[in-house]
Image (cartoon, rainbow, N blue to C red; front, side, top):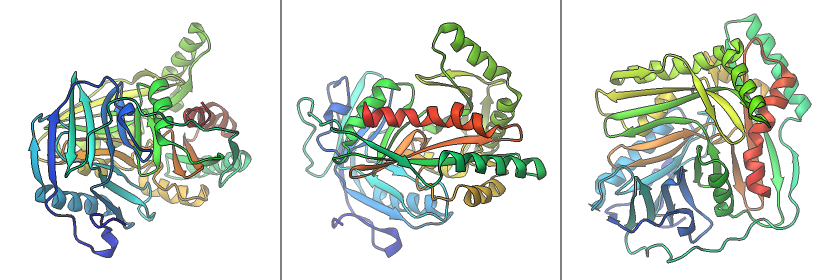
Length: 420
């Protein structure tokens, strides 16, 4: 561990006096080609966002419900001690931290990283933030090596049949008690001949799924459609997703799938639970809150979702990370009531989700940031990748349909990113 890194569980001190400088730069057009090393940090949407490289500081947080507060306390101390020169002043300028938190509070592994260099792009403006004497990005694209040779796929904790049995058990519990919804996930493993290059996966994901938020943080990489929270000064927004169907192979089939989703009582019920959970949290912090009256369709490259936009204005200061902590876990990734759903997840999934379905995103020193839910993702460990997919289960769920119509398409983005 480098001298300027820290580990909260060991009680070590934060790095002091980081010299941070943000300057405008010519628009590079694309951010990913700037990454000169595989250990990339990224948050990208429709060609805009942030990429980072190097590490000025890192903290791995102990398990517990206070892991978010511990991470923010650590960050606040680092940011307050920093000497900041910001010539641009947009959200994402000055010192920026990328973070990824575990889904379950009993799980270890939440991590926050402050890179030594960040390149940003927004609304036609571009900037470069450096800490210390870190050199700027390379002048041109850096060649990266795609996966060569065959990729071996194998089951994770549960086989497909075992997962269907878990879904059936969940439906029985929902119909018998007060639990209204639970989200069950399963994992899938891939092994390649050589270590994965994060930049290759990011490039494929950003190209094929531009409407998703493509992210990378400490070995977790993916493209999530779900924006948990965005804060830009006093304005906040969230995009609630729940209810999923595939895209059609023809325009007529695509429209039929979408119309069926909009008319589905089962999916409407699932979606309403998530909207309510987000509304309840943001209402406590906003003096103005607007929730779309009815869900609309969000059409992505491979899936369609029911989507509801939520926007508001903060009545008092609360950082994007603090809001993400309160919103997590939403009914979209846990269920409702959350406590009962989490207990059933622990019982039926048989695995530790790690950082899958936890908040992932970035925070700047003014509290601005964007946090998504880590979906359509994989945890990388050299040549090995662990993929995840989950499905919302309610009383009307059918185990076979959940597997074939919901879970399999949710694995495909990362399968494509790995195999091309």
